[in-house]
Length: 521
Image 1: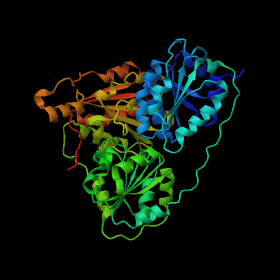
Image 2: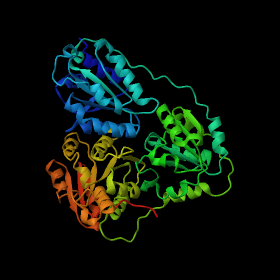
Image 3: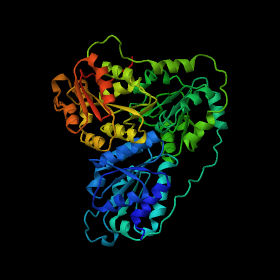
Image 4: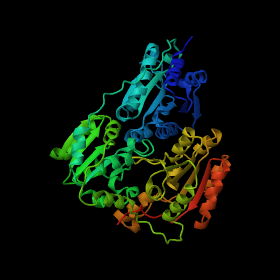
């Protein structure tokens, strides 16, 4: 007999899914069993939130779909937070959850609840399957919805009795290819500008669409910036771009919402705006924020439009606008003569060693230390905590990056507050053989909130944000990984090289003087 669980896994396998990030539970054990015959590997985590973070990181680095599997009730509840991050970062994630039996609906079955109601505001689509005959079609649709248009998370709730019921197997269907987008009008609009600027959203960043920004710049002559941080124009990795952005006469947003990160349109108060987005909600929001200054509104896949715009040659323009924007983006507030072990010097030291790796992947979590990491460290492939501003997923992203590319040298930078969210996942990394290096900038506090207290309420009102001198490195060693404690700047490069060479999940716990996030002046 072909069970519903078999159909789920067979349909995913037909779509090319080979890895799923999961945490076991009563209702989903048939899916664990079915994964064996479907040839799908399960990476078994210690917390449900980790499954979704890993699925998101995997989706970004593999440039495909990430799949998470959790049980019902509190299992699904634990997975909700990362859906917000995946949604804001346009990451295609399929979240599968167990559910109480359909045959017991309304009778108070174990963990019976409206699970779709929990997830629908955080996903592109959320659905509960109530017939085994519908499983193949629903899973097939869920994959397409997650990947097409504006990528994002979807949730499919799978009742226990439906997974065990007999069901007919099915194969995946091919996605319908959209009609080519006519970009002639938009191209003419950009060509007519003297100071145009193109802003790419997170789904069009360098990791997920390598080379796209450079091709756009070459073809249009317009400077291109990628915006995927909640700090928007004040993202330290964008340098001093905020100081010149307001001079733009035309702004093109490709897959980038016109929202708080662009000061609701006030970032370029005299510019005309063009917004290209697959989500009509974002086009509506742009009209609200820009009114008559929104001169182009295109509902289309931004990637398709970007590819169309990247053909051709730029028109002649007077002045050095593109060079000025690039120079502003390259500016940093960091100094080179520091000798103390600070957020700045630690990140600079990590950058030097990361450049030695053949296939480096950089993971940056959020917070004050995370901003230094995003500004000071770079690699061809990068995953950050994203527009949602949520912190804590960095360890999971690092494991997922290694699962997506077993050849990668993965280095994740995070603060001592951030590492506490998923410290136990080092056991997962050891058990599942997913080596990476976590560099902890340890300033003994939640520094972002500490800085808010100083700034808003005064130094005499600082409280409640301190942390201990916990030896996270020793925890990792006890879990089977590599750990080292560093208190001197000169020791950082050697510690990092030793951690990489260990071939183990590693933690470099670095005692630093915490500083506010960098601000370019």
